[in-house]
Image (cartoon, rainbow, N blue to C red; front, side):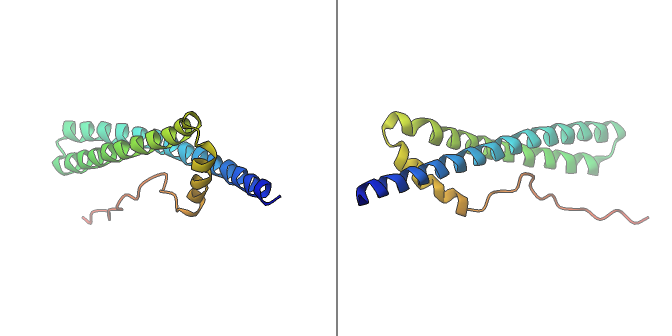
Length: 125
């Protein structure tokens, strides 16, 4: 009786773990898409600043684009980690145990979809 109950609890935790992994993977993919769009926009704005001769704007936008590219690499690593956690355990025969441990992801705070960008005060004439 208790062995069956523990098996049922492990199965329930494994289901919650898979749901946690899928939700984190979805958030990471959304973050990756937003990051790519923002990096493209920042690069385009840097080109506009370069054509206008706005050196300060050019440097700020290039720095923003570089930060976004760095965040994209971090997000890609997260996507790869979550995909590996979803794909490898069934083939290793440890699916229920690994997925049950992944249920703890519900207690770990998720990263923001969009990173905080410093708000700059408008220039005073």
